[in-house]
Image (cartoon, rainbow, N blue to C red; front, side, top):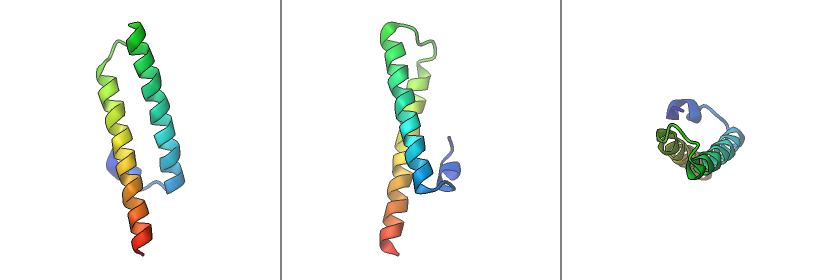
Length: 67
C-alpha cells in the first residue's frame, strides 16, 4: 500500500489497517514455517507495510500534539 493512500486515512482507519497487516504477517509466518508459503517475498512486503503504517500513525500523532 502506498504512503499517500495511508496519509488520506483517519487514525482509526490506520489502526485497523495495522491490525489487518499484523494478522496477515502472522498467517504468512505460520505458512512459511509449515512449508506452505509459495511467495516468500510477501513476508518482506507485509513487514514494510506495517512499518509504513506505524510511521504515518506517529506522524499524525505528532501533528496533533503540535497543534
